[in-house]
Amino acid sequence: MLPVVLNLETVNLTNEQFYRLCQVNRDLQLERTAKGELVIMPPVGGRSGNREADLISLLWLWNRQTGLGKVFSSSTIFKLPNGGDRAPDAAWVNSDRWENLTLKEQEGFPPICPDFAIELRSRTDSLQPLQEKMQEYIKSGLRLGWLINPQDEQAEIYHPDRAVEVVRFPVILSGENVLPGFTLNLPL
Image (cartoon, rainbow, N blue to C red; front, side, top):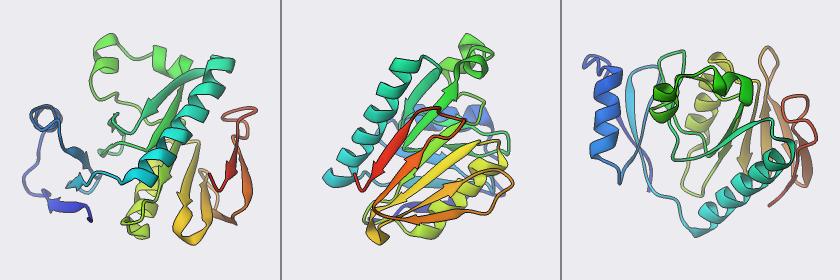
């Protein structure tokens, strides 16, 4: 099942209207691109859901040991500075940046780009929209991102002001200076 993309470019949905739309349609995974498209994401299958849970668990465990930030699941929508409202499969925000948000901002769609994000390509995902989503994060301030692509047995590593690096499985990804000491062995 592929995502459904609705062009809302001329509708000009306000942030509050998008938030309310998500609240009254809690069973749908909704995102909004910086171009004004509404993306309705299908649920993932068992293998992808298990891989996503593994990624979040490993990130959470590292963060629990370091106490450097906050970890978020794929249910969290971030209000990106470029106008998109996106939900990475796993995300992390540095504590200092998170604590600078008000309680109201933390409880809604946080108006912040994660410092680190992972997108996991599921069997039915097309690669190009995920690559575009990763570029949207980079343009919004993402410091490190991984697009994990089990179908092609590779991962794409995203940094600001650098070309995307593609690495083949098996590989150990490093959290570099963004997530010091965090590593991920692929394949999962």
